Length: 155
Image (tube, rainbow, N blue to C red; front, side, top):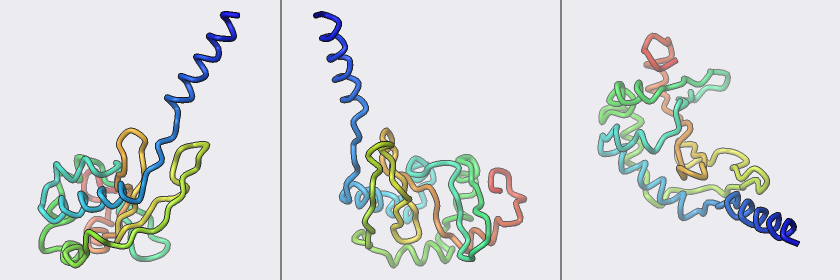
């Protein structure tokens, strides 16, 4: 009698700790607002915690491979990546907190997004522990600066 009860309790505890916490559109909206505000305020330290590294810089052209940016390179080259004079930054200023957010789907078995969710030029992923993170972004000007692969941490 005791063994089935213990097995039942273990199953209940296991299933509750593994339960999928599905993200909401409101939580993605909050993440977008936070990422946008940090990028517009030149805060590499604050921004870095909102990204999944290596961060992928995407080219606007089909066939170009993404550039992988380490956290150290992100912090060291933040001004060149997202500085006030960069066109990406100027375009970001035109966005709104209410930017369009596409519908997203969660795989209930793996508790993962079926694909990244795009908000403006940012592609977000969802991590059960860290929440919404930027995995990649379209930054044509920065991509052009670093595509030769001569900067440490950006290849």
